[in-house]
Image 1 (cartoon, rainbow, N blue to C red):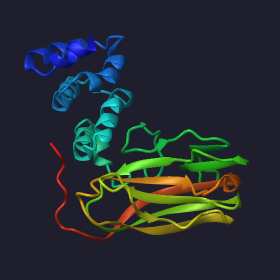
Image 2 (spheres, rainbow, N blue to C red; image 1 turned 135 degrees about the horizontal axis):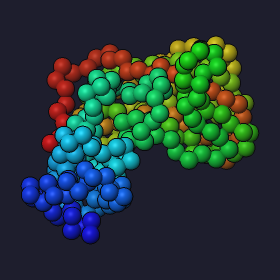
Image 3 (cartoon, rainbow, N blue to C red; image 1 turned 90 degrees about the horizontal axis):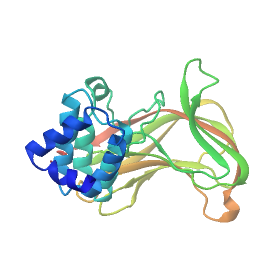
Image 4 (cartoon, helix red, strand yellow; image 1 turned 60 degrees about the horizontal axis):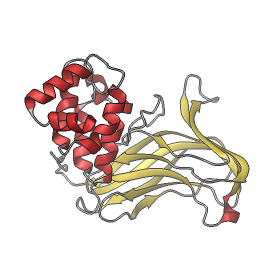
Length: 267
């Protein structure tokens, strides 16, 4: 059925009929959006349907948008995916868009690529939690139970134009183990290469301290989008043993030398 509806939305009159049904919030609406990216041959038609729902005051929520954006990311249509996300934001959400979104970890992540996403962990917890040292503040909290750790993968997709940047933030905590935590930036385009990484964090840092590391995007074609990820940088099973806790907050991207012409989004 969704395959048939996916063909209907490729024509204006069919799209209006489907949009009218979805505006009634039927109990199949979430499943429809989960299956639609595999059922429609036209990403432009999917976007047009979502925009029609937005204009009617019933825009797709994060769960409904996720499958579509994830498919576009797998197809390496990074510019189009970013354009879709921007067009479906509310004016208030659009005003808060930054090179790193939700950089202070103040809002619950949407699960979409341009917000924080969390991988499954073993013997560790990565979460956004209340900061006990700053009243009313929230921060990224990573804690380890002392066993072999895997799956620390807190990430966000960035859309930086070619240039040199500094990724800055604050951190505190203490880990016990051979290897610690590290922020790493890499390309999501033709070359999935590292374009910058932080020092490894595992020594005792009792009070909040700033950190910074450089990131260089050399080419828009080879590196049209980037991923910023926090990892436990273990190279072997013996280095996965770690205990302790670390906090991170107030991340931002500071340009050093960036080209004057911004990269246009794919249509």
